[in-house]
Length: 82
Image (tube, rainbow, N blue to C red; front, side, top):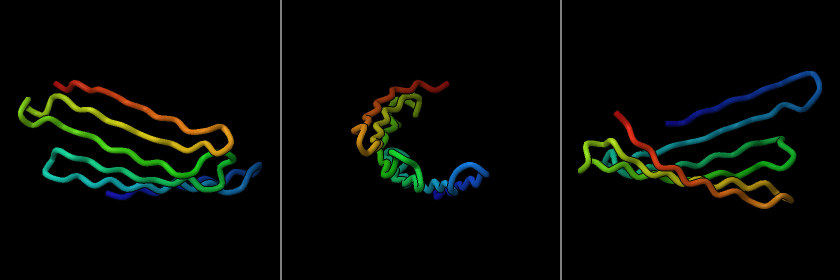
């Protein structure tokens, strides 16, 4: 799937977000994105893993975001569904 968002306010330049997600075998998920016209944001990417042998209730996700001069952020999440 692909997503796109844009905002144009009076007090700053138009900001753009675009992202894509690809799921393989309902188990492996790849994500990429880009944020344009942000001061310290840009490339994002990540991946996820669903565990079908456990009734798809459990998942692990990792995300990365570049903040330019401020460095980068790594995010890891664990999820349990009902």
